[in-house]
Length: 54
Image 1: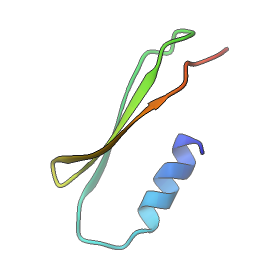
Image 2 (image 1 turned 90 degrees about the vertical axis):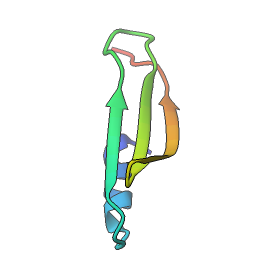
Image 3 (image 1 turned 135 degrees about the vertical axis):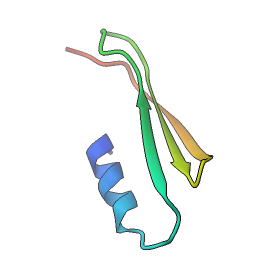
């Protein structure tokens, strides 16, 4: 699942919580990208995506 697909899936949910998706990472080869999903200021889930390959 790509980040775009994940954002699209999350946007389908109709609730009152405010979702914020935070991406952290560097575009260098081999670096991990950490993605956090924050709802109403609380960390819901954190993902580590594989290294970026060029």
